[in-house]
Image (cartoon, rainbow, N blue to C red; front, side, top):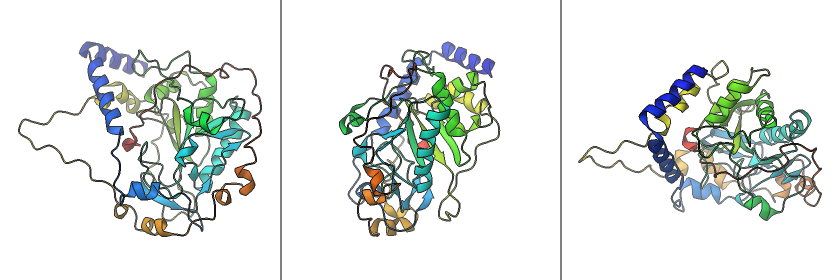
Length: 358
């Protein structure tokens, strides 16, 4: 595999593709800046729902085209986690997802030498498409975990809004992990997340996947769950399987056998994923812009989800009961042991998820 990657990099040098790659990335960034959705669109309606529905928890549809009922909220604070970007109101999920996050946060301290996790977006109260940032995260079975370790104190709501992302990549090299930022504990954290049977795949930047392929010396049974994708250089994305009995949930095809350190990874180190779109032929009609997603484009049950009665309050739907919503709000976080991860590394660029490919 090392020979294949070396050949790919030599190809880049011969073709002098740095400019093309930069143009492709820039085009992706522009594409991620979505227009303001119309008031009746699925994005606007689901983003406007501030509380989940009453009743049992059910994921409906596919990860990138669906909704959910009976969601619960991850408490903003726990002994081994803190929720980030609270103003987005995206810490809702299926109870199976929230339970996994709490368990993972505890195991991260116990087994990975991690001081606690920072949890980013999970889903909106009723799932559905978001105004920005993702095309998946729609049925409560996806969650983002920052590569930044939890600090040894409880952050204020404003600090959780302002704390920048930290990229694991070198700014002056193409798809190369920064050795000054990457640590063994981050590798252990990823493999711990992949070890749970309910976890189906974990999205990481291609450079991080390659780093894991090249350096992970432990059990590689679950290494294939780490899937290379655009962005994901400052966080990783956990996706779990449809829970048992969730008849309305559309599963994703399981990952291929093996560790994934093969030609499927080598592809990301070729020009193809980063090339800008080809210009239209002279005189050709410009392509029509993508049609805005409407509620009618989602599974039929999602229209009823929007109209369903809400729970009484956010506290009432917080996982662990109403007391969990504020139990740790004023408590200091436990101090972590001295480790190279304690000092937050230099800030990198905000990740561009290219979520349509998730």
